[in-house]
Length: 259
Length: 158
Image (tube, rainbow over all chains, first blue to last red; front, side, top):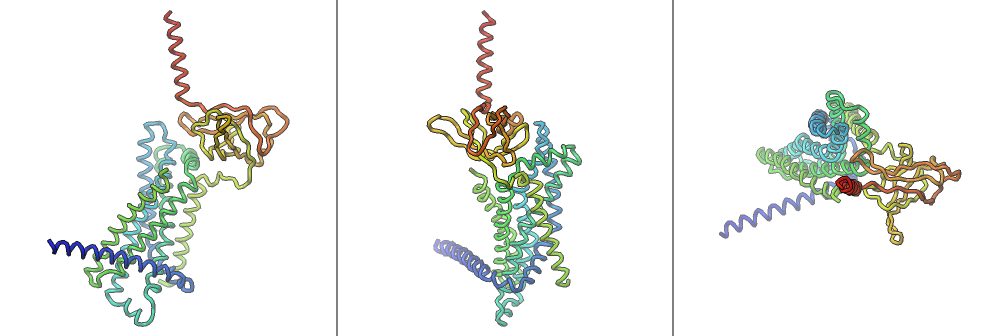
């Protein structure tokens, strides 16, 4: 009985310790951001790693998600004779929900896991301690550029995902199923609002960018410095990011679109 | 890979992201229909504006010339007061222009349609449109239709 209580207490303590370490790390990363401006090359290098290398998977998934939305939306709408609204369906679902959320999930799988593994291995091979020995702050030199790169790359990736998805819906809807070309775009322009829909989508993707990158960097920095520890940390990054993105998406949607 | 190639790729990536945002703004959303120039305000009183929203279009001959700016309620007259903002370049609307609330399509959104009168003076800032026609409420229409149908049925039987 006492043993199980002790176990519960230990679990709780370690949970709150991790939470606290995560927030301290977040604060020190934010404090380290201004020091990046004289050395912006570091950020560009990381933007290449998390952004440019994620482009292929984002573009391909965006295209296919858009094409599937086009097919499914058409099959539903054609029953009501409202297939001209296909553009609205595709654009709204992509811009409001699927663009930011699917991009964040893919980003966690493609870039987040790589960040965790890289930082975790740096820790396991004591590169981070070596930096500290040489009076180089690893938070400023290693973690902050990666964080800023994720923050920059995520909204751009989400925008590319949505744009490519809308084009995919266009290929299927207009090219394959014969929805009117003009109606696809004009109905979309009529119903999609710049401030209510597009801006909120961008805000969502910014929030997801911060959260996914933060989780990835924290897990890497907090990993047990063994091969098993790094592999566990990588798994946790993907699982926790996915849960955080989906949970936050509900809260953000309720705040933005729930009246 | 050299720094130069990396930087060029990041440049391409950022440019592609910006292009996607630009496409979302101009081609997908209604940003391109926002007009930068100021408009002048015209009010109109309606008994019923159900379905009309702020930023609903105001059209004349089917062309959008303004938007609904505010919808208020007059406590004294017990009427809805709609404030419309008409674009400044359309400043030759006659004073006796009439305003009606129409529906776009069977289940579409409500909009205000203006019809020109014959007055030589033009509407200016703060003017009120006197001739108005209310929003068509489907329940009321069906109610009228049913009641007329019932009375006709009664007289036909006698």
